[in-house]
Image 1 (cartoon, rainbow, N blue to C red):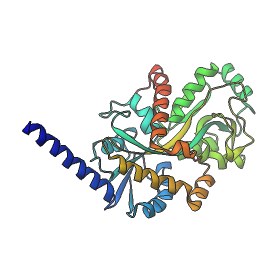
Image 2: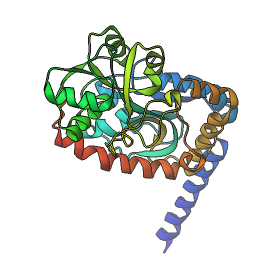
Image 3: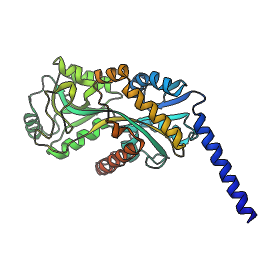
Image 4: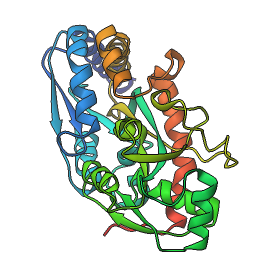
Length: 324
């Protein structure tokens, strides 16, 4: 009985300490780990949101890019961090969905992180060099079927959204083309613009400006609705390929076991930043889509993440994608 009382008292004390930490959080700067190279979409997003989140939290956000091994080094660092809210992850589709099916990671994407908030998304679309001999999706599919393996398609590495999107498109259309891996999106986009690469499943937000000036062609948006940055480009649904959707999304995560009060404070700061007029305008100018208020909760991100893994892991594994 005495042992039981001692255990109970210890548990109460731990709970009091945890509650106290959550109530005073944050009392020092918060590090946001970006699992990719400097200058990428994750760092750009973090820079836009960090000023408003700093105001909400009362502490500065330190943005730190941790590239390597397809983003698994950065994600692994956050998985091993203390669950106190001072080291968080700004993850994306590549780091928090695809990599779990490709790399021999030491963490569990579904169990070792607390979802905080879905931040932005950008649908992918099928683009080509401006001189490619097709002017719409029907013509593109017909040309690819008549010329198997003759077209080149840029990716940003094995298992990335651009690669998986291309594989999914091939499967849905019965076409074949050759993938050419690049170290980053910028170099890939430039080679499509220069005509050195034929095709790419690219982020709308990153390539919209090239389409608008006629430097590349856009055939279809891989989403349920048209993209606001180029409303004249139809969706794959409209063109007879229903369900061919893929979006490059970004979100905030904390290590497993982070107190709920801390997660709630981080979520509140992120939501307020997304709603800030200056930040909101900048994100829209970049062509990023901001989720609805119902989609911005930790619970909604958890559900969405689970659905993305259930959709894409079988496709990735069936394709036999390996780390090179």
